[in-house]
Image 1 (spheres, rainbow, N blue to C red):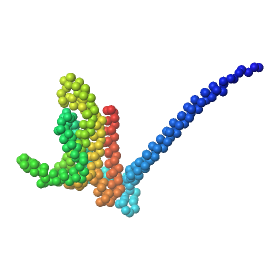
Image 2 (image 1 turned 45 degrees about the vertical axis):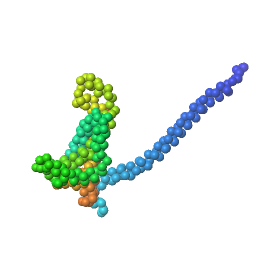
Image 3 (image 1 turned 120 degrees about the vertical axis):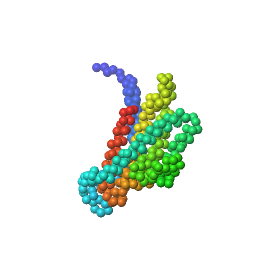
Image 4 (image 1 turned 90 degrees about the vertical axis):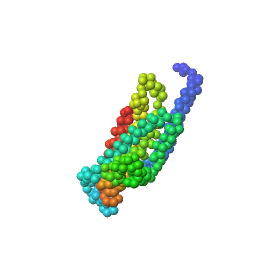
Length: 321
């Protein structure tokens, strides 16, 4: 049998094998580069994750653990199971603190969000004027002032001989003057006014940043359809800043539920526990009454309450998107 000539076959074989080898080498290089990048990313994440686990997750787990014990923080602890939670449900003072926190949501969240929308819409129309710059600066200034300083300042303003009562007497309304932070009927609303004053600037800035991204043609189309300023606001402006509203509501609701410094500086929970909030009650239980178990149980319930309120807000915001 005569064998066919094989001239040129090795060269063609090498030509076929070389591209395959180079392709495989490129793939290995890409995998090695991705692996190096993965290790670099992991090296950057591990310190932050370790710090988060040490200073957030571990205290959280310990708080849940302590809530099942009767412990004063020094001597040996005693297992009580759900006893601390049962006492929480039976204690009107602790339940009242949660009710006060829920009421503060109206002042710390709803009021500044509503006023922030109105002020942002007004400033947007005056965007090119010097008045708009001054208004933004003045309204955002409370965000720069420390909350302790803001609480002290408002304590002076709302005192019996403070500026608020002096102005009321000057305009002939001396009959309504009172110690606003010392009256059980007005103390919590007065604290709420302080919180609304602090949060207004943040809400206004968030909404103003969202309104600057609205296409001007939408307003022109609304005007062509005969829409006035009110209809423009509800038909164009309000739907366009839905994401900013969600962020503002989330931040202000959390600040209302976690209120501590303003309340502690202005009223310390009084008078007659009318401004007592969970953060302050946890502080008193843990550091004055030495009831760490009860304080931990209240903290756990309070954390669940915050999640139960904030998570639906986040979900509604995402569904709106």
